[in-house]
Image (cartoon, rainbow, N blue to C red; front, side):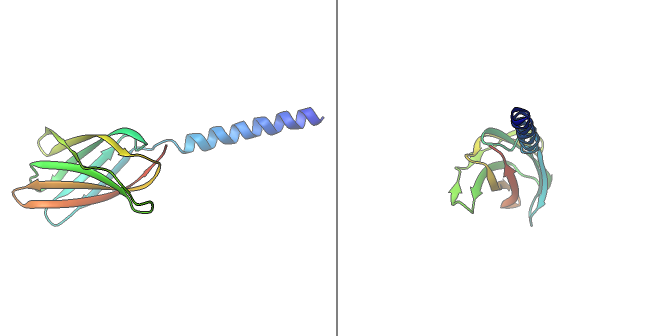
Amino acid sequence: MKRALIALALVAAAAVVFVVGRGMTAEPLRASVAGARYAATVVIDRPTTGRVTVEVEVTSGEADTAAVSTVMTGMGHATPELPARRTGPGRFAAEGELFPMAGTWEVSIRLGGPAGEETLVVNALTTG
C-alpha cells in the first residue's frame, strides 16, 4: 500500500511538471504600438532566452531604419541595441540575444525616417 501511494504521488508530480512546463513555453508575441511619428506591429515568434528574431512592420509613417534593444527594469538589465535589416517595404528584422534571462522586458524599437526619429516600446514576457 505504501509503495502504491508513493508511485501515485510520483505520477501526480510528473503530471504537474508536464502541465506547468507546457504552460510556461514561450507564446508568440504580437503587439501593436503607436507614437507621434510612427506606428508598428512587433512580432517575436519565441520570446525566450537565447537568440531570437524580432520582426517589425511599420504600419504608419515611412521608416528608413530600425533598431531593437531591451531593458529589464526590475533587475536593472539592458542589452545593446541591435540594428535591424530591411526585409521589405516598411519591414525590418533584428536578430540576436535580447533576453539574457526569463522575465518581463521592455522591447524598444527605434525607428528613423523623413519624419525624424522615435522610439516605440512594447512589453514582452519571456521564458527560459
